Image (cartoon, rainbow, N blue to C red; front, side):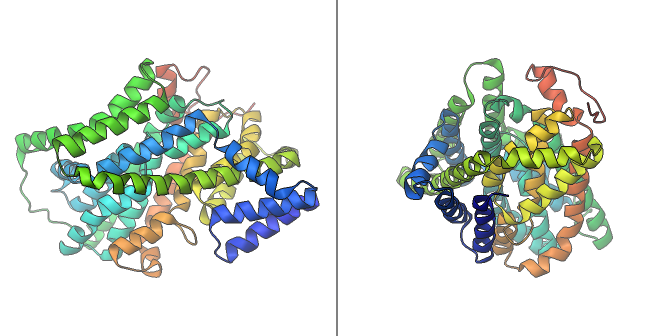
Length: 444
């Protein structure tokens, strides 16, 4: 192995252990690698970082972030909670079901797992605590359910994956591919909620049914939020606008409802919202820029080709190879943020899985589902720490309660890995995938 790669990997791991922010870990280790390679490090890194974010498609990220903030502060989460409660609130463990369903709906609207944890969890966790649900169970439900918003479109990480494939995968295609896997993850989490609630006797089953009219009224209140997904994806699929244009339309739509109709966001709050959006965007783009610089070093030293050759020479059948890749990605997700992980490991693993007949759309869903689990695990898990903060509990207390949800997420991951039709059937029906679909994966 080249000395530059050894320096890159060792310095990156040391900096991570020292709890240096991931963007700085990648930037510093990349700079050291450039020095060893004999390049003018400061100039080269300074060039590669802005080059890495010089993409028109990435403009969609700040717009979707802004629309998510407007939706979160504009009362959308509360209306989605009321709608979910009308659907499933009266069953045993009903509030847990409401939590999962609302996270799925709000995550799809906002495209952010962190936003779902803070917005939905900030309301649902105290309510569940008051109704006798265990605090750590409530945190576990919110933490894991929030990740469905990264699988159900629109999702910023899907835009990053499209960029990482070099345009091989369209944003619209990966958006559409995420629907069924995201719903499947949500159903798996609801199943765990049902089992635990039945065992622990959570929830009030004596609550009377509130009737069709009540449910319909709550649905009408939730329609504006649900329509955002329809407008964004419908416009992209029909060709009315691109994904980037759709993100701008999402901002205008969210602004109209949050500021002009619901009036829960004041005009005086807009500068603060824009500042919050700018800070979040800068963090994301810093991660993208430094990870693209690191990816350039890896590519220049032929690391993706070397790893691809090594795994290919193992002569593993497709089932075992996909299992091995899943295990690697699960491990990566525990210590690396999603954005740099997608940018670094997509060019490494995508050529490998293509050799065994895996479609890039399908692999994108596998990759994102793996890294979503990492958001719920220490030491980096963003959703884990945020959820513990919202629930006013600790990671050590939550871990024991969250394990059944991990198991459900891993089971759904394996189903989506080996049954590729789950990811590809909707892209096939909408014209974003051409080729055969196998219910069970088949290697070439």
